Length: 132
Image (cartoon, rainbow, N blue to C red; front, side, top):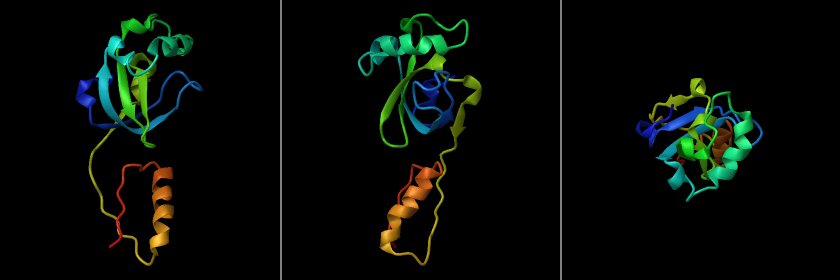
């Protein structure tokens, strides 16, 4: 389960409500863990819960007030609020926060956008490209 220990970490996982929300969640940054009261300030989690509840496993909390929520920054920069029971716990992957340096030779400045798009499309959205 995601906890406050995961704040600032990059994670990937699947969620139960297939078709209702982005799935899978890939390389998202955990921004915060909220109580239901706090989550309501950012999203209509009561309405989200009503839509998601039928897709959750038997025994899941029946009220949006009975669990906490995670705020994520997705690869495209948008934020998303998810109920913790919506996450398939066995699918959670916490990515190590290491950096690599790649040098691409024999390209033009116009190739930067193409290289960025290729990296993002292959699951590497957290990057900085500079011309040297």
